[in-house]
Amino acid sequence: MPKHFLTILDIPRDEAHQVLARAKEMKDNAVRTDLLSGKVLLLIFDKASTRTRVSFEIGVRQLGGDPVFIASKDSQLGRSEPLKDTARVLSRYADGLIVRTFGQGNLETLVEYGDIPVVNALTDEYHPCQIMSDMLTMYERTPDLEKLKVAWVGDGNNMAHSFINGSATFGYELALACPEGYDPDPAIVDKAVSLGAKVTLTRDPAEAVAGAHYVNTDVWASMGQEAEQKKREAAFAGYMVDEALMAKGADNAKFMHCLPAHRGEEVSESVFESPASIVWDQAENRLHMQKAILEWIYK
Ligand code: CP
Ligand code: NVA
Image (tube, rainbow, N blue to C red; front, side, top):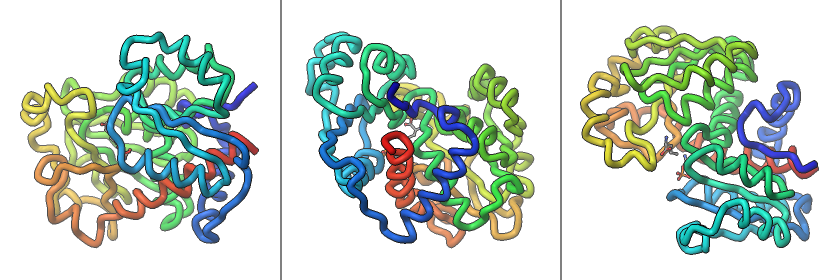
């Protein structure tokens, strides 16, 4: 049976800690291997990407494999060929699918009808590669993740959901501040809490950030929600991470953002460009962590 990585919860807790340590080792030693020699991994993207696409294409090469990129709109998927048919065709050619799409159900269809590993490169529901990489960014500064308070300020979106799952796996306390109507999916919260996640939800950004070691936010309108931009700007007023909000965090609190960022909306220019901002390390760590995830799948 192929291994898949659709959410953080797909990696058993003990193995997730090993993946984290291995990602750090890969980063520290600029690891190159031939693990994927002779293998072709297809990247199929329904949405735009800079970091995920480039870090996966380079990471696959650094493990000895060949990446092939397909923009869905340029393929027959863009002309309504069913995903379940595409899954069976591509399984005959390739050794894995790295997929950025809308509904998580699309990934489940690829798993059901294909017979090669599927990796979630972002869906409307989750962004597990990003949050695993963010774990590395926190771990290399503060290795005992269970002692951390992480704040989430803004939309209860795909990023928030993966941070919620991450709390179940890595044991940090997660405090979310979301405006009314933009809470995370209660079913995702309930499942993670049943697995040990420590999650609190408030409307007050200052309460969520109080004493936090890491303060996270994300765009107010995710990909696919562009038509809601104005409505969301109104709903999220008061949720910008600025210097006053950062000052409520722990001493030396760090600002995190998966990027791309909208300065002047979810984060102020001064926080984004401040020494507290570790966004470039986050972006770099996509490469190292995704190599470790591919190793977990293919080794
Ligand atoms: N953070 C992230 O996933 O960036 P891209 O959309 O550029 O891949
Ligand atoms: N929540 C954002 C993350 C982008 C990396 C989106 O889905 O567009």
